[in-house]
Amino acid sequence: MKKLPLIAALAAVTTLASVAAHAEGRLDQIKSSGTISLGYRDASLPFSYLDDTQKPIGYSMDICHGIVKAVEKSVGKPVKVNLVPVTSSTRIPLVANGTVDLVCGSATNNMERQKQVSFAPTTFVTANRYVAKKSSNINTLADLKGKTVISTAGTSNIKWTTEANAEHKLGMNIIPAKDHAEAFLTVESGRATAFFMDDVLLAGLVATSRNPGEWMIGKEAYTVEPYAVIEPKDDPAFKKVVDDAVVAMIKDGTVAKLYDKWFMNPIPPKNVNLNLPMSASLKKVLANPTDSGDPAVYK
Image (tube, rainbow, N blue to C red; front, top):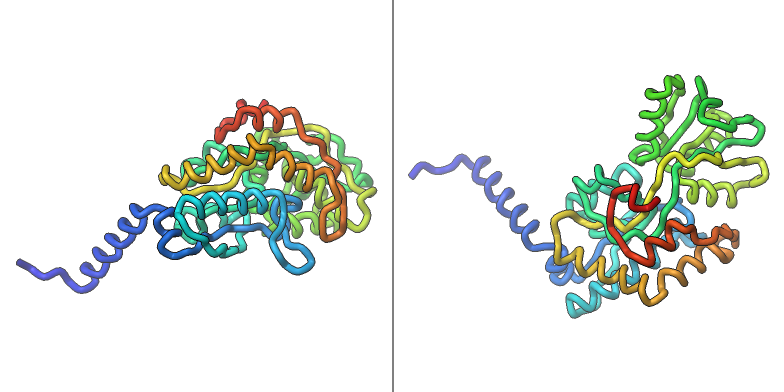
């Protein structure tokens, strides 16, 4: 029998190892390593952001810590939580390649993303809008014709903005930002007229800005954005543990209490109160939990 060249042999071994790791599943990996990796955002207030000690906190982080307890029960042992910073552009690839087990933040669940990853049941519903300074006199999408606007790279918002720009022949100059904080600063400094993003994130940025009174958030909602924890695709055992944990937290009132904590009370580090009552869309979802990526389900 002919011997395989060394490179071909190594490639075969690597492929087999990759297939074996994939077949093992996240629960087995977490049990054997004693570690679960949670992806977090550093500036998605109040879902996942850094406090004044650089610790990731927020509504989504609290939900993820609840999931960890269920994972520990499933694997029969305590597990160490490894916190991994992610961005809008890196979060899905890091789950897909196995670096991160769950992403805890402000991720929209949609059909396109479900081709690469899965999502836990929805725990927030928001909409795509823009923020601009009141002095810019922007009242409609048409008012942004020929203007420079910005959105965060890797988000569904920048995709929508690009498509709307072409469809309506607006001639906007669209800048991709690395994160929400950079995008907001770009408008604040006058280098862009408006920032397209989920309205709840815009509300958080405005509330914690130097002069909240100078800002306005557009009245028209352009899309529906259901938020959920990102999970690996094609791992039914892990998905069941995660989804069951989220549904249990919804049913026993934990999610409602967390909502009150993060959206109706002062939150660190500046003790700002977003004072954002639960929407009818979210109440509907919590009454009948779903992991659907179809926006029609949330209307």
